[in-house]
Image 1 (cartoon, rainbow, N blue to C red):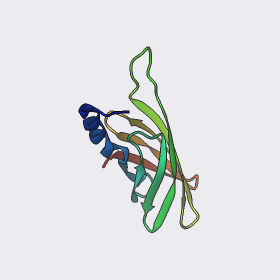
Image 2 (cartoon, rainbow, N blue to C red):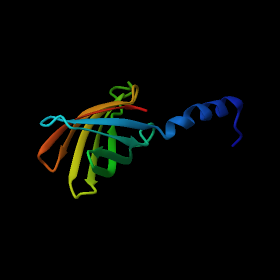
Image 3 (tube, rainbow, N blue to C red):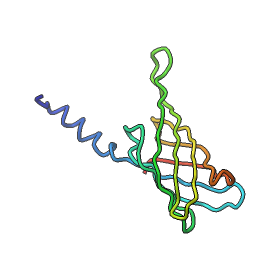
Length: 125
């Protein structure tokens, strides 16, 4: 396939977005402890790596999302995501979030070891 100049400009424009990550901040509702991390491949992907650090614990795992296809021909903007993470100390965490594909922001909650609840906020880095 032959690329025309306007196709090349489009590819150059979207290339940086393909590797975009959301910067995540979580805050414990009970202790106020904060953690930070990333959700990778968020611009065009429906899944990717998830990383969170809370104190001296490193959580890693995979996030997945289901995108809203819209209603009656109107384009959908939001989707629902889930991340399942395990720490280097054997703890586990699950996160559920809702996100916007237009603003690349997400809001949700994470639950650590089925006990402690964290509020989640994420934005494009």
